[in-house]
Amino acid sequence: MKKLALIVMLFVGGVAAAQGAAQPPLPPPAQDLHKVCADAMNADPAFAHSVVVTADKQIDERTIKAHDDAIKKIAQEDGHVIYAYGALWVITALLVAFMWMRQQKLRSEIATLRRDLTKAES
Image (cartoon, rainbow, N blue to C red; front, side):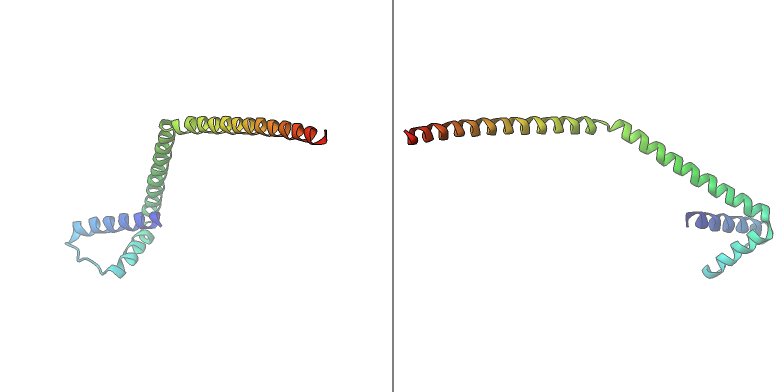
């Protein structure tokens, strides 16, 4: 869609420049712009090819620039990965400590129950 819009704009500009040399052009109605652009492309295949090549090149350059910007942004903001690993280690350590404390509590409770049971048997 962007390529089509760029092609239309280039054709309208080219047609306007070509008409401007001969006579002052009258602006065509909006619905006729597509026909004017299509006629300009059909009249000169080399021009049509150069428009498509230029549009492709500009889109490729924008895409590469966007990818480069994203890579730079990710490289500058890699601190969040370190913080995430740190948070995971802290959570893991807290979980292990909680489980160990719970195990100790259960062992002492079992020992108390065994003593009460041996007292009750005798």
